[in-house]
Image 1 (spheres, rainbow, N blue to C red):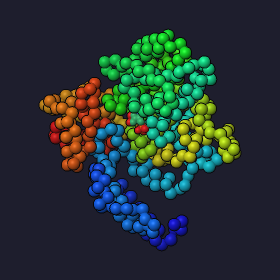
Image 2: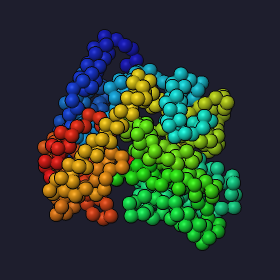
Image 3: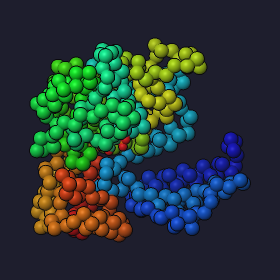
Length: 449
Ligand SMILES: Cc1ncc(COP(=O)(O)O)c(C=O)c1O
């Protein structure tokens, strides 16, 4: 199993050939198969003697891969898709082949150095000081949780008498904030949004102060604002909310898992004014920064607080020099893949200007799509897109009509667009993060509505 013999050599050629063909040709859309369909095609794959690499690869190529939707298909516009650059995906192969450990400087210095340069680019875009730093974690959910754990760690030291800890977040915050609160066994104070679904400073201040007055032994330890909500791409009042958090000595976290990628475009940087007030933020390169799954950049203004919260201690770990940058110390994890390297390689290869151009291209397409929707006799645009999510209604349709249409769109292999809801009403949304998506793709989908 561990020798690179002739059989493995021939398998290697087939795996590389498959990977290159997948990269070179247009991605298939494909779709889910039922368990019964899969089982009848594949049967039991785990056997005492093994199937052999050729057979296992064939099963993957001809059945398993076809039962998965390609998230980089230009008409995959559901949830938040992904659109890795060719160079980022290719470098993922290198990372897989290189047995790199990304938890400590001792073991992964070169890789950690490169990851940190990619993180530095993001910190600079956010006007964070040079002392800031962070780590690539698995996804936005773990990024948000790790930041909030660091925030509570800092608050516990400052306010030892507090009986109950609370996160303030808007009703539009991502579901991972509630999930983090559950894991941490803390409360969430929901801040109502304005009519445009933005979290505003005055309401945030009012709700937090009211809560503190009514609950003197409880304390809000973090305010979470969203820079690009998942459903509609809305950016909260980052400056105003940051000011009220800073004035009250409350940790300010910005969840920019999807939207903060647009910081890469000088044209949209102003949308994020106030990010410099944050104590931490996240942005997922696997969403709109053209990296493969799974990579969330988590950045702290003062990484020492995070290190205090997250460093694991054990006899076998003491050999790691705490004076060096050990990525494991900045989030909830120990062993880690150097998941930021494909992103770094692509950034290093193409340069940051190309990133700005690609962001602008997707945002321009979102605006052009909104225009088409406004002209469409059956559709109603929900709001002008602020980033690259376009949300709209189909006049006269019930929730079941939306679902039927979405199922058929996938079945006909036209596209993948799933229904969502807004204020209790069903809606459709296009999340455009793929520079390969064209106005023709959008027209093809709109023609089915
Ligand atoms: C705003 C926001 N935050 C957090 C997340 C969670 O990220 P992940 O799915 O990488 O855990 C998402 C995912 O879509 C998101 O849109």
